[in-house]
Image 1: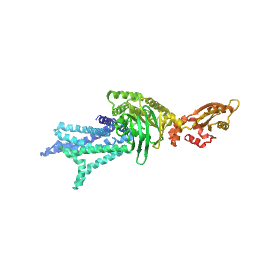
Image 2: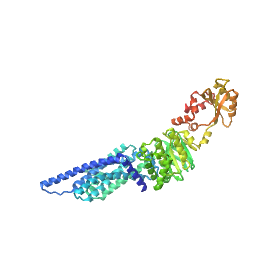
Image 3: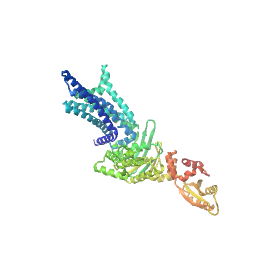
Image 4: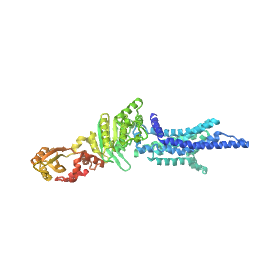
Amino acid sequence: MRNIWIIFRKEMRSYFASPIAYLLLTMFAVLFGWFFWNMLGMFVKYGMEMQMSGQSYPMSINEQIIRPLLANASVLGLFFVPLITMRLFAEEKRTGTIELLATSPVRDFQIIFGKWLAALALYACMLFFTAISFAFLFHFGNPDWKPLAVGYLGLLLQTGALLALGTFISTLTRNQIIAGAVTFGACLMFYVFGWASNFETSTWATVLNYLSVAGHFESFAKGVIESKDAVYYVTFIFAGLFLTARSLESMRWRS
Amino acid sequence: MITVKDLTRNYARTTAVNHISFSVEKGQIVGFLGPNGAGKTTTMRMLTCFLPPSSGTATVAGFDILDQSLEVRKRIGYLPESPPIYPEMGTAEYLRFVGRLKGLRGAELARRVDYVMGRCAVADVKTKQLGKLSKGYRQRVGLAQAIIHNPDVLILDEPTAGLDPKQINETRDLIKDLAGEHTIILSTHILPEVEQTCQQVIIINKGQVVATDSVANLQSHARNAETVLLEVAPRPGTMATIDPAQVQRTLQSVAGVNSVQVKDRRNGAVVFETESRRGELVRGDLARAVIAGGWDLNELRPATMSLEEVFLKLTGTEPAAEATENAAADAGEQAIAAPETESVSTSEKEAADAEEPHA
């Protein structure tokens, strides 16, 4: 536990000592802010139209602002995951510091878990900026906070899964660009696997749809914790970290 | 302290280390010597548990490198070829991180960090980012991280590579200084380094141990004859110059002398190198022969064989270029003399071989 914490702290320090963290946080905040402003604008326009026409339709901040925003944030994660994970192992391999880690009395899984946790923590910092936007909604309206909390949990799980995938890919190369590009491709692939089920109903399409990251987020965005989706993400995370451990081990045998 | 038995490591198509066995006693400095690509780094990586061996075993401080890898890692300090530093960290911060990684904490961690910073003379760059430090400082920070947890065994992979001569000397002194507390294995392809720093040397070539011995023994063993250097000068007043060929003939006629070569000329004096059979003391006879010939004898000294020559004898390969450059300073007169060597030797071929690296 202590070793994981040591690695975690070192990784967080690396993110925040370099411009990486600030750059990512800024980009995420700007993009999310833009999404929020647009959603809000649409919501306000819709409300005004309703008032002018004298008709009344049910309006919900949760359904019309928070839910689509969470969906947007989940797509945004896709672009940020490679940027967060590409350096995790590739950089250590390039500079040779991996030799320091691998010859210290620390187990491989502690290194891996510490690094993954740091990546997730950086993503959590990004989500903090989304909370600022949501705070306005709570100040001027009264949306239900529970679906939002579930949505955040879903975002953390989904991004955690993709981060595990990125961590694994980062162990395969010493070139950060390659690690980033492959991670982006892989994440995108996992996002669009499910499309096949739109026109195909055979078993393989169903399997692909289940494997796809995107479909599992919908329930969380709605504010529902579906156990099958939660299990999917947790399994995905463990599979990713397990592959990372195997990859590190094979690096020792091959290099 | 370290026992290595039949350690072997294969890569995809090549065998980097082939059944290496040796052992190192507590408190010794052992030089791991070999040309580039001999398998030094691979062996060290196996000892530090970075690479698992393909076959064979090794124990460090009584712990097996495969089965008790974590125990071994606690007791080893390792400086890889390039210091494993994080460029964005500060010196003290980095040392604290490594210390924690090695299991130190609290007051002890702070004490050790202060101690190693003083020991390795990096305290003056305490807060500086490692990426902005000079190569010499980085190397010393690398050494500092290796000794932070006061390990029983220190493994240093080419600790002086890429440093300037002053830094090389400082690093060597530091290593010698550390020897009392730690058992040290250092690898190098620079021969004088072994002569100056180590007590024991393990020569490895093409993945195999070629020789294991103390530095002193190795020098005398590989020498199959005694070499004596004589500087002969014309006697003032009686002659203006000397005829090297004549001196050579005179020296050659001394019983027990195998060969005589002109090594150098300086200010009218000529330096000869004679090789005599082992066990025969010819120095007195040589001196008498020179005086009897009417010349002055400025200097007479036995030449010990440099490790470089030992190395060549044992491995049959040329050491790396850097080693030659470095050794050239030590063997200055030989290097200068090489092109104009006039040999009346009966073993001309052998003599030419010995000159090869300097030419």
